[in-house]
Image 1 (cartoon, rainbow, N blue to C red):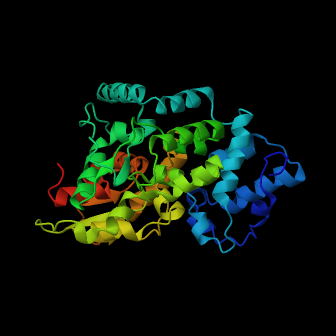
Image 2: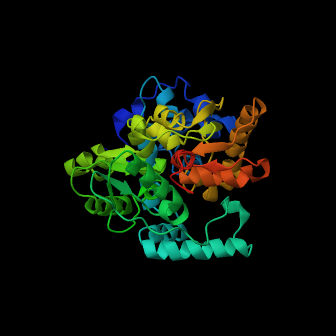
Image 3: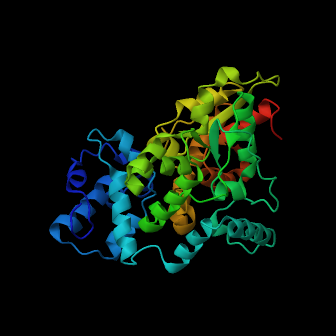
Length: 393
């Protein structure tokens, strides 16, 4: 790493040849039409600061903060530019100098590492929603006032990672995942207590905090059993621990991580057969599943066991959730979501669907809040399959 303004890797920074093939895949460029809000434009701004001594001014900070970090540009790049790495390091520098991630955001992220506090806070937030005290700008769907009972481990064939927000807001999906794992004949272990993987901290440039949470997460799931993760954002972070933590042990841990759809798709023949009529399920690929983990086929394999899969025509364009992005950049996130909603409307116009499948809590909540008036429910793929097989409520 260079000792310079942004501390960016020179080879990674020079890899971009400004071909522009990334532009159609960048959600912020699509909604603004402005070069500065594209990967190519942001890299050009990084080069200006890193190589030419340009100031880190408010304009530069805005260009960096408005990136969703969806990394949709990476699969489209013929030069294999590691844009995600460049953006993450840039945000580390900006956060270290307090140019981004204000104190209240840091305080909120700190709660994620204290699971009991998070559960209590989530219940209070759900109550606040019922009393109409929670601003609609946060874009949250209705949170549960009560959550199902915590899971009980059944063995040690795999670890089932429960995480923080996923356990607080979508615990039923953990039950569905556990039911499907059990249906394949496997058993699962659980971390001693719910914990945060550090994904949101990475996005916010809080590298040291992310490393601390990563080390705690690794310690909670020892051994060599696979680690099954049903949140796309968490899975992407866990698979990147080798880079985030930078140790051999972290790299070995990351190799054990597998997305729940990925794990179940390889055992599809071990699942029971659905006795209910096949429904039509519309699929939305979370960016950290499709673009970062490069997983889309397993989701369709799993859903195809019980339903007919209907595709969107937007080539996996981001929905605008981006972890905490929808709360921090509500206007841009809303404009990006409108494009996704238009794609959903086009798909529904071709024929009715029963549900929209999304394998990430941020995406599902961001879209649920906007799809309520369209009567299209949003559910995790494992919930859809577990229900169709009679394994979950």
